[in-house]
Length: 276
Image (cartoon, rainbow, N blue to C red; front, side, top):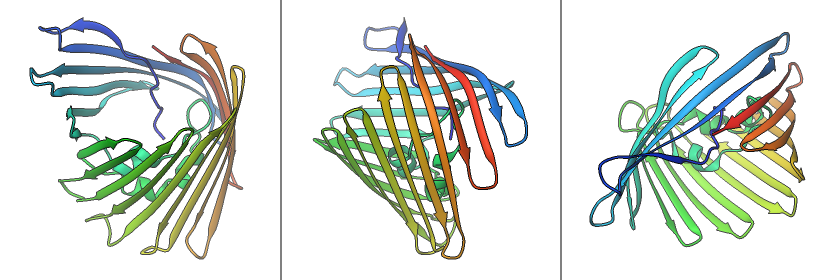
């Protein structure tokens, strides 16, 4: 999974009129990653740019993109342009699929050890889209995405939030990727200091089932998260287990570590993540 940017946007510039703004936020980190045989250094920086404005009629519009350097390689990605109003939000760009945007599980460790990727294999297989609509209707939400170029992948998700509990259901039509589709169900909730999330995905067309569960316990500044995922195709089955620890240092910095095992390979990491 990509490193997830969690940062509060700081207003640093005003463009032309009071209703148009340009904001910057960022993330960085460094640590070590064990790939099953060797420990290797790891570092990254991300600058996220957000441009927003509003028409005289109250229609919001904006654009976002990231500039990331990951272990020496630099890329500009996740470019999106949107308009938003009472009808919802319409976004064009590197939006991916609605299922990936709304139904994924969280990863563990400093760099993300991929325990969630096993449970999300059917979601990731169709994570294509360049136009997405999202809308909220009270406690209900809906998201639809479509790849208008090569793959023609279509994805639709409905969500429902009720206090500390959330539910989601999604469907992906694989378009030109393959003759088939996938169905997803996700549920989660907070029970005091414990957070639970579960994901189930199934494609009858390729006879693949994927499940994943994460359980996190927060005690003061520390959070311990256990993860389990399973992938089966009716003949073979693979299990992945993981354990992650995060300690919040305050000010946007945290120390994160994790270990994961699939029965044949053990991976681990340790590092510090910073948000700005």
